Amino acid sequence: MVGLKPSDVPPPLGVKMASAGAAACIADIVTFPLDTAKVRLQIQGEKKAMEGIRYRGVFGTISTMIRTEGPKSLYNGLVAGLQRQVCFASIRIGLYDNVRDFYTGGADNPGVLVRILAGCTTGAMAVSFAQPTDVVKVRFQAQMNLDGVARRYTGTIQAYKHIFQNEGMRGLWKGTLPNITRNALVNCTELVTYDLIKEAILRHNLMSDNLPCHFVSAFGAGFVTTVIASPVDVVKTRYMNSPPGQYKSAINCAWTMMTKEGPTAFYKGFVPSFLRLGSWNVVMFVSFEQIKRAMMVTKKRMEDPN
Image 1 (cartoon, rainbow, N blue to C red):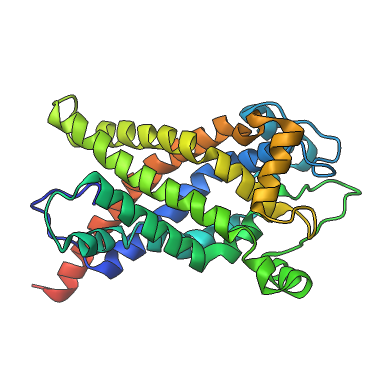
Image 2 (spheres, rainbow, N blue to C red):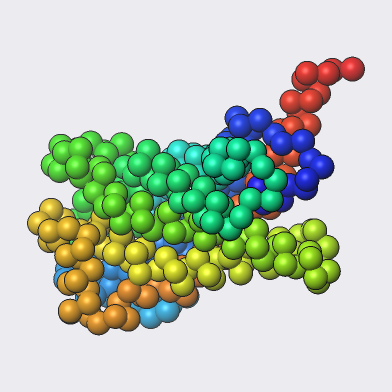
């Protein structure tokens, strides 16, 4: 796994899953305003979605939101976002090593295709489990806190209940297919690209295995991931945020975007997506390694108090 040296003793599965979930929550708290700005830019262009407000660029979006809705609006959906990461990251990142080793039978130096397959597998597994939290998160981020504008949801638990009562179980798992596609792409691209960039840096002695190397690898992985996954991400966001009946399916959503807004619509919110993924990767991977090491030290002390 990323960050592990061959001589390191692999941590137990529980440690990896707990470390991944905690690190992802830390990364979400740090980067959530960028994610909210990304969602607002992605849904811009939909009828009735923006209530007459136009967003321009990442920081323009953040500035407009603070001015019109207050700074708390940048963290709309944070509770659902943290719930999502506890379920989501612990599976897609925490299980990655084990699934990869399962495919290779524990062989050393697995090939790129095996890594991609493992990343796609854990990404799809995580979405299948955590989809309702993602639906609620996206809807809260898209919801505007303006005077005179009715709010669909007033709290996280109320949102789960409202969606279930009005849209059924299908509403809570709305957009699962594009989300599985998106997160399978994100997971395999993110983890595999990080591994490959880091290995290339170390192989050519450009940097040592420390924070600057991790920073460059994580940011590079974030850029490649954003380029590949952005079109699916935009469709996922539009479809999950849409009221019942607006789109017949995720494919219909994509076709509507193409015919009404053109191909550039699929890269709406690209800059905040890149900034968010790049910074999220840096915070997550650094936090992941530190939390994992701390948990291993604590575990060792508990097993051998002397």
